[in-house]
Image 1 (cartoon, rainbow, N blue to C red):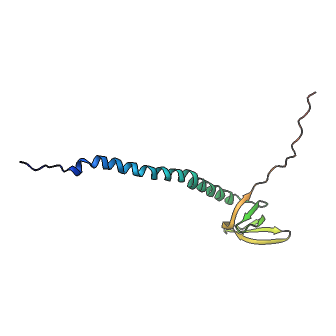
Image 2 (image 1 turned 90 degrees about the horizontal axis):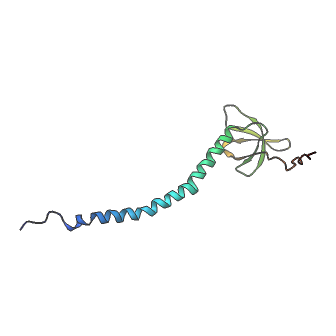
Length: 118
């Protein structure tokens, strides 16, 4: 009688492989959800902040990491220091990295009334 060349463990490997794949599927799904709900939006916000910091100009309103509202007065060429005014005639130097957001000027709600036909 000849010994069997294939052991029963190899015969079950296809089922074990399928079981391993179904175990990892929820992990992949969870990672995908985290990526699209948390990681990707944060990366987009960082890109937008970087873009707005590079486009800073005199007169822009900014918020520093300490929560101070300020107006940009002077940008120093070749430096990451920015001179901002935090109160009338009170100017301080801040690092560009400490600015957390650039406030956009919003239009007032003083829309013109529609012209009367006639």
